[in-house]
Length: 157
Image 1: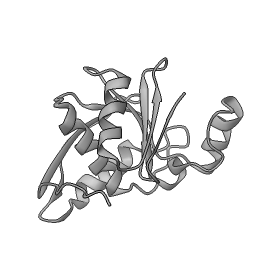
Image 2: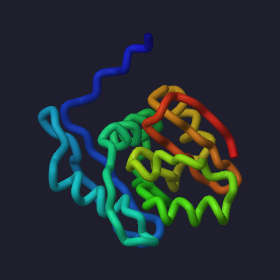
Image 3: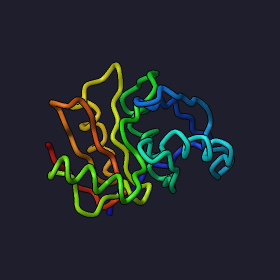
Image 4: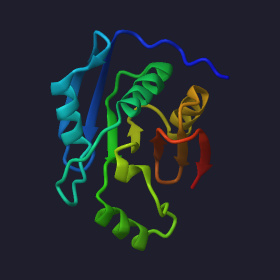
């Protein structure tokens, strides 16, 4: 059994929605719980932009981003390419790209496709794999990484 490292009592993130350029930077976790205003702001930023609808946002996903960013030692904001998706949006993506999963953690608010300005997709995926928290997909040619809070697994697309 792998022992998950203890996370600090205060955790911060910096995030930019790559489609809308909306950004958020701040403390999302304090004193053993999610900061409600931060969670609301991040849900808005991680929304399905096509449908302009927010959905759930797994706090463990934010922690995964925090852990990977800390491991990489980056001060740059995460660029969120796609996070929460409605079923309708996900179906459209599947039709356009048959490689998209039939059942996706994106529709549950448990997945994010992201990039960093100062790190390659391969470096991000490598750091994420070392954290062993969930799914990691490396999309090297397209320059992004998929992270999710499902079972630990890795793929390259």
